[in-house]
Length: 237
Image 1: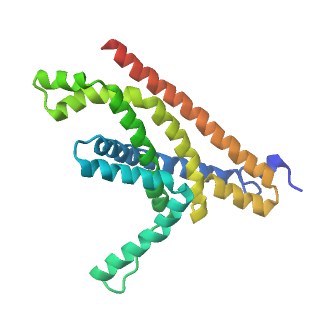
Image 2: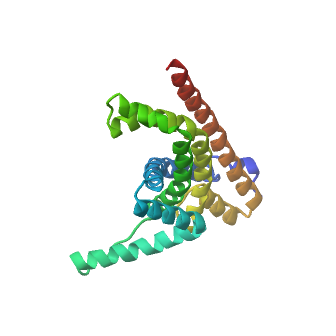
Image 3: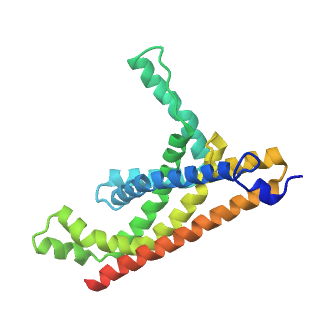
């Protein structure tokens, strides 16, 4: 029977190269999802605090749907639903042509919807923590709505929302494991393949857990650095 060191080594007898490729896919998926999820969450938060009732209703419906449906079910709906929509559109434009969505794109879209629904609540709480006088002060010195948002509100918003968004980033890293259910070769899927082939399930799933823990620790250092930078810029003001 092969030893643990052999199984977790590089080369034809080990699985470390496959798992490392899975780590790369996991990190790429999380990083690709983050900017879209943050942007969408920000605009959903704007809609939820809008004076227009229809925008508030749309924002509340959006967050209710994606916070209420299980993450795995959201992934399945998108993975199997988007090809149907694309196929319908393609048939209208070019009959006889097929369309498909790969696991990475489907996972990114699903995680983006999930992440944005939660991040919108973080942004909404941050918006509500900023006094109305901040907006009025910007308008009183001649700033436009966009300038007031960019120069006065956004710096405070980022500082207030950062701890909550940092927690959501860690959750996003772990949620990438869900995409293994639709065939993406990330950490959990690669570890599962190794476990089935070698019959060392505890070894590889335990190793996968250590990798996720290491990613969380590295992320925590990065988050702390960002928080210090944001706090330092606030003190300089």
